[in-house]
Structure formats: C-alpha cells, structure tokens
Length: 314
Image 1 (cartoon, rainbow, N blue to C red):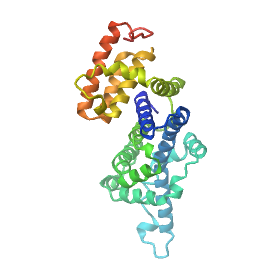
Image 2 (image 1 turned 120 degrees about the vertical axis):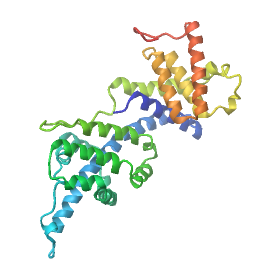
Image 3 (image 1 turned 45 degrees about the vertical axis):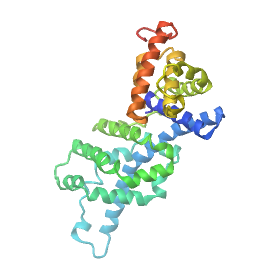
C-alpha cells in the first residue's frame, strides 16, 4: 500500500518536525515516524468499512420502516437494490477485512455513527443514487461501478468526513489520497463469482521498503551537516538562511540517496524528489532544487563519488 514516494514524504515530514521542535531524540522521532506510517492501515480500514456501515444503517432503517404501524406500501415493500448491492455483500462477508478490523480494533463508526448517517443522506440525495435505484436491470458490473462512483463522488469529497479524519490524526492529511486511490483500485478489481477476491493489502510491499524508512531517516538525520556542505557552494545567488527549510531537507535527502543508497538509480532519486518538491514547495523552489541537484549529480559523477551497484543504475 505504501509506496516509496510516500515513504520519502513521511521521512521528510518527520525531519521537518524534528527541526521545528528542536528535538535530537532520534529513537523517539523514528518511533513516531513508524507509528504514523502504521496508522495508514487504520485509515484504510476506516474508509473501507464506511461502505459496510452505510449498507448496515440503511438495512436497519428499511426494516424498522417496514414494521411501522402506519407504514406506506413503499415502506412495507421497499426497493432493496441499494442494500443488496453485491459489492456491499462481498465486503461484509470478507474474512480478510473482518479479521483486520477486529485486530486493529476499528470502531470509529460505532462511536461516530452520525457521520455514517450524514454520508447516507448525501448518497440518497445524489443523482447517482436516484439513477441507480430507478434502473430495474441488475448486474454485477452495474453494482461495482455504482460503488466505485459512490466512493469517488460522494464519500471522498465530503468535507465533514475529511475534517473528522484530520481531527482524529493530523498525520492522515497526506495519507488520505493514497488510501482512497488504493481503495478505488481494489473496488474496480473485484470480480463476480470469485471467492476471496478481495484482500486487505500489506502496509509495506516487502521488508526492503520498511528498512528503507529507517535507513533514509537515520542516514539523513545523522549526516545533515555533511550533506548540507554538498549544496552550499552551489547556491551563490541564494542567501542560505532564506532557503526554505523544507527545501533544504529535500536536498539533503536526495543527496543522501545519491551517496548512501547504492541500489537506487540516480534518475529515480531525481524524479522522486522533484515530484515531492512540486507538491510541497513553491514553483520557484522546485526549479531551484532541480538546478542544484542536476549540477551536483554532474560534479559527483565527475569525481566518481556516486557508486551504484547493479546494471543500469546510473
């Protein structure tokens, strides 16, 4: 679930937080870094389980309405197309998801069911829902596309839900797009008639990625002064004190990868940090970082200081 780009962002944010707090407790900050990444799993489960809870809430509402003493014909025999959507059923019956929700003790929607009601009301007021319910043709493909659209167009953009998640854990702000993209990808991949065709993804692709978190964080923090020296004489037109702190961290991390990560190609490092700079720095800053890193790579290569192991890694 967590890719290398996101790992770089989380490390960058942790180093920035260290600078802002004046902390030099490497172990404590590293522990929080891993804690913030680990919590991405909870965010994933919270967002995905909202679909299950929305279906459950509507099922209960329809049942209670049908039992009313003065129930209308529509209430006695409601249109159950929504609650019988096959994707809802697949998610509700999925062992992998049920076990993960239990193991991680995810009970957000039990404690905050008002958000489920809010989402459900928005869904039922949408053209998406109205068109789906009025279509008498039932198919797995329609059910799947409806849930994908519902998630993308109603749940994801909901500002109150976003505020709730941000208030719960501030570190989730940058994780929400990653998690939503993962969920949409998985929903689109669900196939009819396949047992166990939905699995909760592993947090890290492999142990290498988990080690990368620790190594990038430690090697950058423990060598900050040495890494800074590499770019200081490359900024003659810039007052060093005026370079944004986030830009200096991006530069140090990139230089750290050039010099201390022999298995990562230079082009990969350049591309990754330029994308990070575009997202987290100003347009001028990303141009500045691009120029510095380009010149630095040429110099380091000339001096044979970049040593990469494996074919095609330069």
